[in-house]
Image 1 (cartoon, helix red, strand yellow):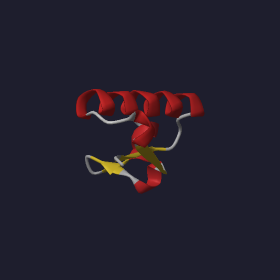
Image 2 (tube, one colour; image 1 turned 180 degrees about the vertical axis):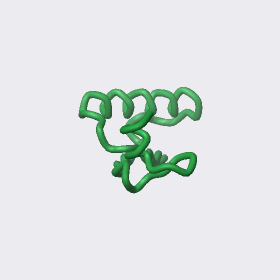
Image 3 (tube, rainbow, N blue to C red; image 1 turned 30 degrees about the horizontal axis):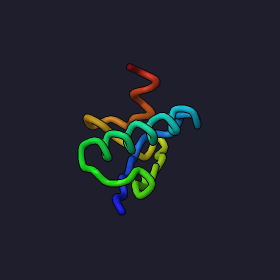
Image 4 (spheres, helix red, strand yellow; image 1 turned 90 degrees about the vertical axis):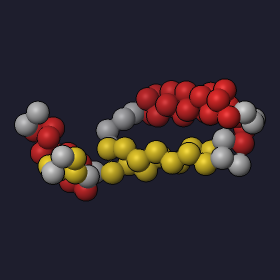
Length: 65
């Protein structure tokens, strides 16, 4: 049973998450084989104040791109 974990900043709506899960499941089964019903995807959403990139909090990047 494959498990794919996705960590991303909060802010996507249900339609975006649904589409991502569908695309990731399709990509996995197309490239690795197996049955789509056995592919599990876990989304962990993280606040911008808890994620940094290039030495800067992502929350600050949104305010000053």
